[in-house]
Image (cartoon, rainbow, N blue to C red):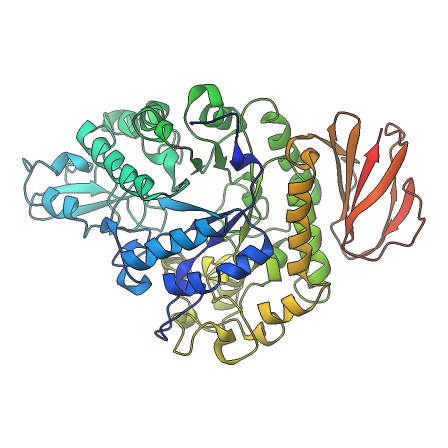
Length: 562
């Protein structure tokens, strides 16, 4: 992009806001833009540089705003365009940047383009979407949608099927159509000209599908591998380079592409600065380490630390010279990190800080999901009726017929997207201070113990630990640009690594479990001087760096002169 030498996005920390659950200003139970505005000083206190705002566009809300019916209007639930303009202005006044969600693999079926497309086969907008006749009385292919069921839905008026890789109310756009692409680019310019600072691109590696749709016979003969048809298609790089040339190269912006099933090799193609596509991608390999291989996300297995270390290290090393990593534990689609990878009961505070240390000391751009900075946890609703997420509800309907309800609900308690979507816990008053109305989804009952007000008052809180991690990133170039190397790679409980820049080294040591374990500095690391930069426990004065005992979920970061 423009001004590559600056690369402010490498030095930034990003905070994701899920607006429906952040803060409600008008007592209707739904978070809104004015609510976000009222909390900007809180984000300034935390120290984040960039806010990624999940969709606030006009939408019938079948998939919580990721089904967009008008790209250039604000959903009534969230406020008005004037509210949004004020949000952008107030953020910029505080030195924060705003990144918007770009959802262009699909639209809502209530978008004007699709309303036109289904009128007739010769409508000018017909080719904005992907239509196919049935094959001998059956659907064009046996592809399955991500939310369950067939990826094809029949339109009686024109007697053809349209493709939807998600909900049937989210028809996929046809990126082979240059007029459709031009319409998308015009929409992107609309927001960029208003002054936004970039895009998070929803499932952007799904936009190229031509080679998988041109020959049904090839598909049914098995020459196209199932479950790989929808990602990283042959023309995706052409489309992204065109997007860059037509739009992104004219602005100083940050881009991050959500890319399921992307490998490091592919990620380098997407993020190589010489190729002019994206700044970074969200990959999901580490998000699949606690599920049974080859099964769905709901089929659980315990996480092995060795697997996690190996995976994160692979991404650090593979993108070391070319590309850039995005660093995250959770977002609006993932369960809460402290419940998933830490201990959300006895050692919630310690393990939340440990997880933050592991992530924020790596090379890449860290992402914080709302509530992560106060250690919000998964929610365990007793009844399926309390859940709102379409993926969760569809899974329950499919599995309840053949599985014990306790097992189904356990999987939901562990992995439902609604774990991340319960309202932000601001204080210990009614509804966690999120709303004076009835919240659109129930508040996690632990808000009386876990909330922002309490965290701000406690200098030893998870919030203040995150704040210090962010301050350290701004003060020490080595955290941004230092070379990463894993140490003690076979240790089953310790996740330790170094970062090196010039004659400086960071030693990052983390105990991933509750049992105490001894740490012994490898002989290959020679230390002249050292100082403790941050830790989640009090460290005895004068304790030697070469060998010490790690307490439950303990983290330490030392700065060394080598």
